[in-house]
Image (tube, rainbow, N blue to C red; front, side):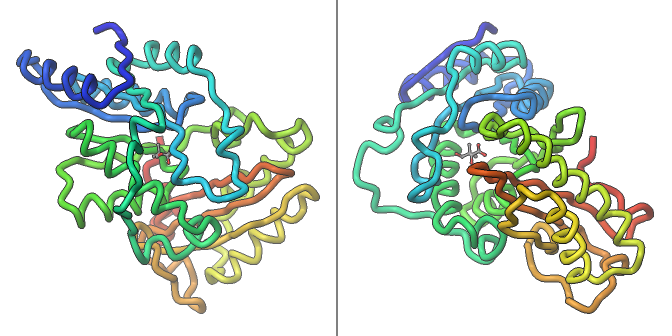
Length: 302
Ligand code: PAF
């Protein structure tokens, strides 16, 4: 199928209904929601959807409700033509590119708030952010009604929020978490990496490097608070790094880990998450691992 672009909800629903009515061999619909300025991380989600579903729908929508005052909504990078090339090359069939008016035509009276899993990390640093994410993802899932939806684990907290919402609201979709994609030198791919000045880009490597070392440090018998401190000290060796948070939580419930327990004895998936500013750019990265497994094995690693 050639890539088709639709901008309205009515057109999108019609295309998906036509597809399902055509009784295809593999009738499942995969969905990849994005805010555009696609990179290899998004391409990997599209490829994964395309490999498992008969139809892959990609949405490109810079959602204003998930940006706080003073955040980068107005300068969020956009490149429609490049996005469409990447979408086609990666195997998307249908691209939904609604306007803000199409998605939010009326004054909004409904909010979607997921509690507890939003208490820490980006939920604490960006108040209201996950309400905006939950609202737009709930709307998109209702509009597309996919069988599976694909999300990158760089936003591990976002996946926990969406998985809780889908479960609580009985939205009939499988949420598929996909591995973080990195540059060859380790920097996690992000549309916001284009904001980084060359020296900031160089120093930002401290995130992936310190997270890689964390798995080794766990086996020195550190507790979670000791590991948080070790990570902070390591990140602070980069003079341009301005730490927003470093935290270690159980995953996916994002509950705390007993402060005095050695991490190597925690038999649970744990998320080691960092958010750090380099100049005006706020980067996040994480490692999801099971410390009690030999070598603190990465979960969802490629
Ligand atoms: O991860 C993103 O790009 C956004 O938060 C999402 C899921 C597309 C919602 O706007």
